[in-house]
Image (cartoon, rainbow, N blue to C red; front, side, top):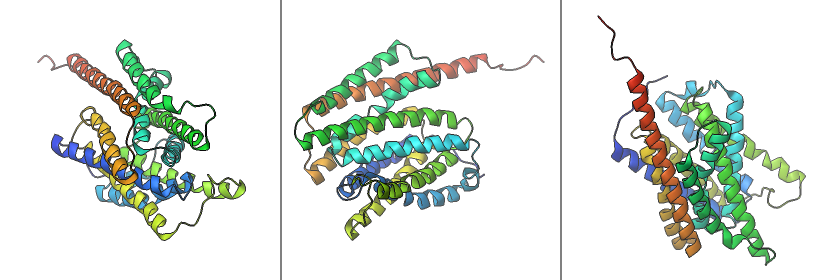
Length: 325
């Protein structure tokens, strides 16, 4: 495998990360338009299939393709694909029912659930500081969700409530993905993780085609899209593929802890795109709740960084600096 150079170039790292966040938000807007016509499973297939060739070319150009085709933990990739594809499908379903800024705000719950799952499944110690940050973030999620806690109401309100819980379920699935990836990186390369997720997402989403034929449910039944919607679906895959490459490349030029807070720029992009394209204006509840979720997430990121620095110092102090002559 070709060697991968690592450089500390924070300006380039931040530019790549912000570019990726912007493109992912654009992709979400494209999916929101497309899912007015096609079911979420079909949208996931197009998003995955048309990103797949671009990712293969990128891995080939990096010299990682051969290494990416040799996983050490195949079943681990299968489970990662199941969790990730489910998260994508739930998010796309939520996008068809909710405003873009609201979907973005609820999605910020992912780091909060990741902390909880890391403690449950990986045995990571979670002290009071991170638990408090999780609590602050979850209060924010409840503020965003509260207007959707309606019993009865008209069909539109009921579907919006369903959409909110779909996006919340997607956040839980993405948290499981992150915990699972923490295990995968111990045995497999980033190239393998990227490659096999694209492959499994394409295969799993395609399985919704025969499922839609067996059960007469419009939410699963694929349709033949018209030219405009078909082009949008193809574009979602291309844009998503470029964004995935950009976000992976950003980590070559800066550490994860430095880049993680820039994920929250998606709220700015989602608000602007939602206003310009869909005439959506975030409610005060969404803005207040999103602010609390961001605060909890940033506190978690800061604490992870501090713990990483402490571990590095401890490792350095325990490493022999030389041997007696």
